[in-house]
Image (cartoon, rainbow, N blue to C red; front, side, top):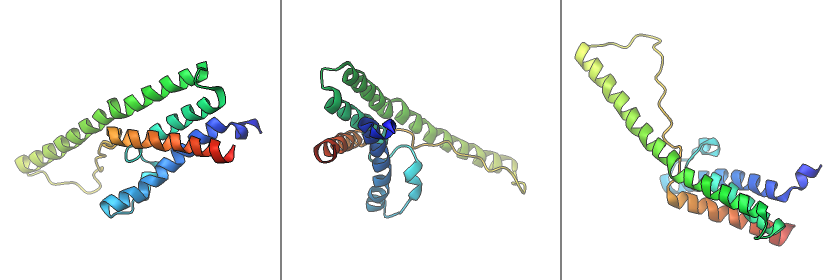
Length: 158
């Protein structure tokens, strides 16, 4: 099957899987907590988005050369993805933190002001996801991870 022989695709997919998996021991080392949910979550160290796009771009550089149009497209794609991970998505996560705190504060105010008692079976209010984007060091670590993955694949496997 030709799809399984597409090394740039396989390198990018491996970059995602590896970066997601390595978040678990890094989080354990830093926080002392084992959190398997990190395997499927966004955000955190290293950025799997960055690992994927830099692994893909590095693999395309090996396959097509630095002067190829495919490398140019992939490099620009990688820059846009990494910029988005540190900018827009990170700021959305910061806004979610503030909105979640405002919701808690408002609930406390209502309960104290009116003596509101929670009803049985009241729907649990779902908090907004706050870990959406990445800090610059997380994106950098993901980028280095992705580049190293492709360099290792092309140096020792292909």
